[in-house]
Amino acid sequence: MELDETTMAVIGILAGILILSGWVPQIMKGYRTKKLDDVSRYLMILIFIGAALWLVYGMALDDVYIMGVNIAAMILTMTVLSMKLKYEKKPDYT
Figure 1 (cartoon, rainbow, N blue to C red):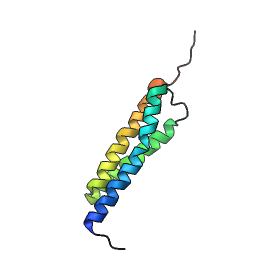
Figure 2 (cartoon, rainbow, N blue to C red; figure 1 turned 135 degrees about the horizontal axis):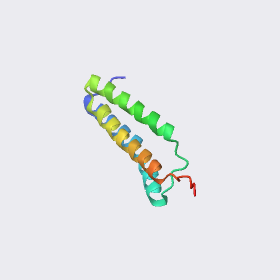
Figure 3 (spheres, helix red, strand yellow; figure 1 turned 90 degrees about the vertical axis):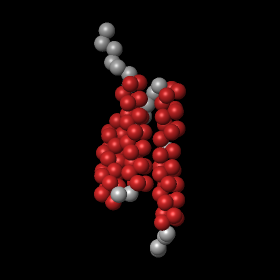
Figure 4 (tube, one colour; figure 1 turned 180 degrees about the vertical axis):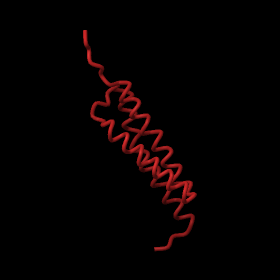
């Protein structure tokens, strides 16, 4: 299936918006509740590494949509991970 450049751009932008918008409720809930116990730090790290590799791939193709979405994904992933680490309960050794 052959799509023109404008159609491909719209598809790329919509895909990026949909994928990235999934992070927003998690960030908002974490900020409100100060709890991210159910979020795996290993998942966040793996998603970050995957996004970094996609960024390299996008750079190799000189594809602004792939690069933009993955830069945003890396920022959002690190936001969730940093919130998780900040709000994580520390053991009380007293």
